[in-house]
Image 1 (cartoon, helix red, strand yellow):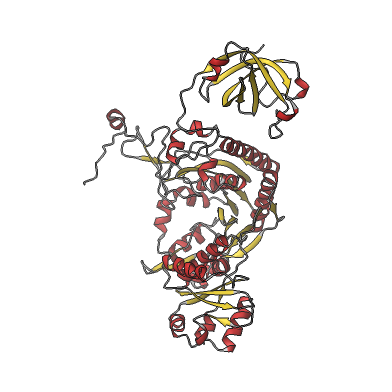
Image 2 (cartoon, one colour):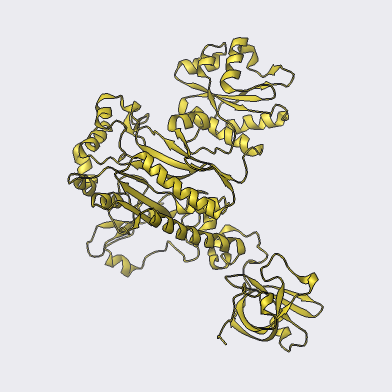
Length: 591
């Protein structure tokens, strides 16, 4: 017989009745029923019920073993009585009557319960993450992640992609988030950087003649934590393709996403192609470039209507370049006054001066403080523009465009969530397209890049030389699901002349490009194919599939919100010897 087990804790069924077996695992739970001791023995695969009758001379010893002790049990498989069958367990029709046991891994009293799952502070959970991961939900999440990654690799290979590894120690990037720097011992005073993404390397692979690249790539960014973003490091499905248009990238990723999300979830999901929403339309309708399409509310522009109204407050703001955003919500006119008051307070907490609204009562009357400023024609224009009728309410935000869009978007989300309007058990994907190439920086008083400076401008060199920079769009896109941005991507600017011109518009001369991006710009001079790609986040994909709201629930050993690894004690001070070898001196901050 094997030293530790003949079966796992998920193997045994009625077909094994009468067999002598050996099982090993953790004590998940203990119950004493009329002198008979029942042990739920747990391993990676499942749970089997162990029975120790009062005639066993070791029953008392086993009964005092702490939960989470690792034990080996030998015994015989018997059938449970009908009243004791547990339909929730695959092994629920059998149990094992024990003849001998051995403690393989003694355990102290655990700092929190694995079963039942206690409500435990995140700090304690992360400090004892190895215990936390024993919980059924977390264990399933991590297994889901493993299976998703395996399926992605298989899918990408089936589509003709090849996986290549790119360097972890590389040069610091002047763009994006802060780098993690790694000091060089052999080159005093110089530093490597951990890659924020394999962006330049995957483009260089295309220039090298490889056609379809992917990698489950680790990325490192020194940025703050959020519920959907882990500080420090994350993994992404990094993809790059040569001789492709934006449509080619979309078709490939839609195939991958539909395959993975339908394989690992029973939630509804529309078949590709996914909805495409231009950036400016997304900001108008949803107040966000990562819209949650499960909420059936679309904001409207009613600036011109109020510009022709008698409401002087809105009218004057619009005349000075501001906008009025309407948030039409169907069927909520019967909400109590407290709902509207709380919503106004919420808008004010976001920085809005207030939140005006009109209530279209079921008897045909219209109520609201704006009524005295709007004639019949203006009211009809509002109802037609917003597509509303009796029983509906329209809220209004008037501000500068960026501020108004964001406020209207936040209020849309608040209403949708508070009133249970979010469609359940569905994945709603969309592409956000046509991002502006440039924007005007109000602080610096100059034109700057909007997002990715390496995207190909729509219209190429002609657009850069003939259009107002603020009207130029980029071949840049985001893929979004249920209000979570999974990735940004772009068709790359692979032409040195176009790249120099784009940077010139943003106030950088040729030397800046040559100095900051020498490898890429030099490679472009030797024949670069048109290419593009994208890199959806693995962590976020699994978070959606596991129906978790916090990304740390799908990562094996995450950092806390302060970018600390409480389990391993990182970051930690270096020893004086380590600092000397690296030619580094730590300078303490002045109090």
